[in-house]
Image 1 (tube, rainbow, N blue to C red):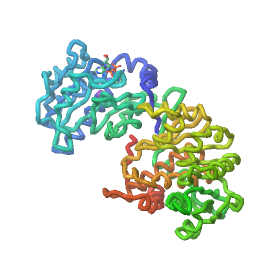
Image 2 (tube, rainbow, N blue to C red; image 1 turned 90 degrees about the vertical axis):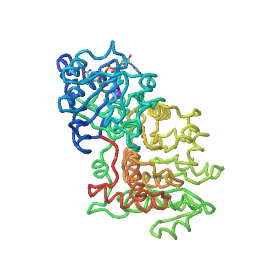
Image 3 (cartoon, rainbow, N blue to C red; image 1 turned 120 degrees about the vertical axis):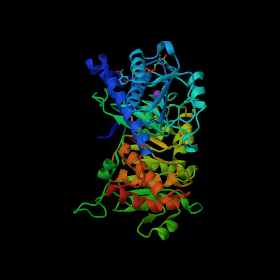
Image 4 (cartoon, helix red, strand yellow; image 1 turned 30 degrees about the vertical axis):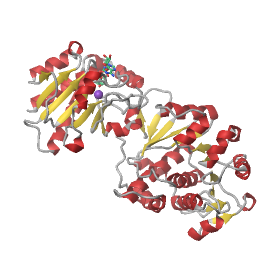
Length: 487
Ligand SMILES: NC(=O)C1=CN([C@@H]2O[C@H](COP(=O)(O)OP(=O)(O)OC[C@H]3O[C@@H](n4cnc5c(N)ncnc54)[C@H](O)[C@@H]3O)[C@@H](O)[C@H]2O)[C@@H](O)CC1
Ligand SMILES: [K+]
């Protein structure tokens, strides 16, 4: 099952459906136990629990309650816990009493030398940035990388919007975020702010309510859906992809996109364009033609990188989009679609793959902080699938379902990386995957390839391309080398 991310409303529905477990405080006890366990694990990794120092920042709601009960559990283990109450009159009463009974102390401000700080300011009830009192407490902390305390966020790092993942300023940056029942949208959309996310089972049904979904595929799921030749397959039967990219003057995009298509699946890759000679000299297995009329049959097209935006490119794009085949449109192709949106008014699957700038060109508006709503809205209005690139890739279908992928690193932020993604996703479309799955699976392999290639040093798109096949192999063998930041 894909990992499903919930909105704050869906979380509340799931909690209420738990009935008595919510009313009698069982859910909160389980949640706080999960928080305490994560803190204990952190302390054990660095020498043990007894006598260690944990600071707790407590807000006015149940998020603070979780943190206080966690502090009580830690105090009983011999951890020295101090809590700053941001709103003393509204701090969770029973949690505060339990904390005091267990030996926890309240203080005006956190002392230095803490091992762990627990962020219990706000969870799914939070809105906007950290308020000044909380901002001051967190502003005084030394970063973990400079020897400061590990920051464990309860449910969501405070100052991060649960539904949109918007990281307000200021907001808590967590080393670990502990959430309950099911991850929230923010755990994917603001993955870097959350650090490692741990989802604790508290006995609620985490499948969420109906409506728009945000999910991500597991590595195993991507591996299982990756097309590989079956015993009876031949070079045609696995889906032939046609790549239209680059030009004789600028062959780079042609080579990268076509090379990625060759690496991603077996079967056949065709190329159409004026860079045909360059492409074949790099990849002799590509069947290349200079014009569409000579191209031969394909099962999907990937069109756009480096094709230019002149009338010839427009006519070519129009011809491709008037077929009844799945088409991926990227880069220059997107600039043309922005000028002529009627081109994508078609029945066959269409996958647009903009980065933020191209997205703004398509919609006429700068991309705001709510990337999820923006990508959903464009997919819905235009009736196409839209893959919005970035550290967190989002692929929206016209029905509102979104698949996301956290790249886990930003090594792929390099010129030409988008061409590689086009080639991978195009070949998956040709193999029969839906646009959303093709886009999300391509993004995952692209991300793994970037980490494999980089191994802590900058890479170019050629390195990324060379790592596509090893990344697929590692994924299929069950040990991708990069850590994805999904829970
Ligand atoms: N309902 C339950 O039984 C469970 C709730 N859980 C916890 O409860 C949390 C939700 O609790 P609440 O609904 O009480 O809401 P929160 O504790 O997330 O925050 C609500 C309070 O914070 C204030 N607030 C909002 N934005 C703020 C900001 N930027 N700065 C400072 N204060 C701000 C609000 O005025 C309100 O008083 C979850 O995130 C989770 O941690 C867990 O214990 C699991 C079970
Ligand atoms: K929090």
